[in-house]
Image 1 (cartoon, protein in one colour):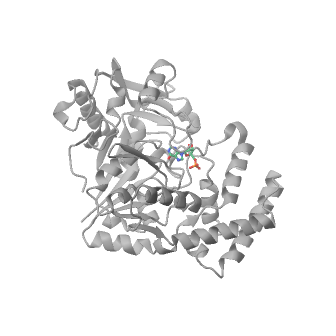
Image 2: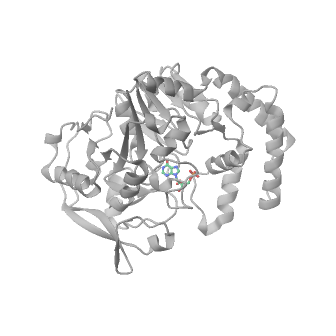
Length: 429
Ligand code: IMP
């Protein structure tokens, strides 16, 4: 029996989709535990690219694919994904949706946009998909769960109450026209239709997951975003509203910590960030352009160009501690091919002092200078590489350096978009 959590070790977009997709073939069950359609996973199956936001990639293998209670669910996006999977002849039979997941409504999206606009230059740079407002409602104990939408008798009144609440916020605070009675009827009908469509997949997923783990199945918990976007441990307030770290899986899937065996932190061989907030190893100019273009570093969800920088092991240190990472899965080694030298940030310098631990004051962080170690680059990693011995010596040296400097063994190295372009050095199940 192995329960393995996959977390993003940086600011999201580490290539978790590819790693989860690769490991899904060895798993019996894949579970999403937090976030929503702010996440975007690109998986390449038999040379075909699929962009998914909510449905776990286990679906491509016919594995039990669970959307856990910690996810916030936009049913318009989910049903679109289900239509897409159907059009690709991929069976939806293994899909399960938690009855306790909170649901995103059009007023959450409107609120997200208005909040960002009101913040002006101090905006967070959210995906504007209503994620934060849906989690706000959950914490305020006025959210609407999947099970509430499925309650045919109770749902109309709950929706009316919430729309009235939101209208007073939208109108009084933001001067927005809010949602009319016609809008209410339209939302009600659309969500009742979603409920009919989703009902066959809805269940108490915590029970399913517990059964799978205790019956000796390989269960993969798939985190979205990354450690530095964690509500508690990230660069607050430039964070998402959920818990991408490993502990988030316990809450967002309803599984006890004693049932978890391993945590794999997915870390890209350089760093990227979308949205605003400090980023000590950020690069500008030629090298940034080179990496952005070579790595196609544009958001899967928003299409925004990602900010790019060298690998930052002070950041990875936060993941090592907060998620108790057992292994690293290093991604995008191929993207760095062609650079003369490659840098790794091993500490920061702040007002003449060396910092080995990530500072949580954004003021301090913004004033930090990275302390780098420099390594020789490598010319090229050919297509289809799946063996360690096929890597150029300098690329091997880089991976070894990451392992030593981070203190976390490397279990996997991804060297291309295809599933086969993965070097597995240790089993994570
Ligand atoms: P939200 O999750 O839409 O509220 O956005 C909050 C912050 O998290 C913003 O900086 C987003 O750019 C960032 N973010 C959210 N989801 C992702 C993701 O999947 N990858 C990278 N950044 C993300």
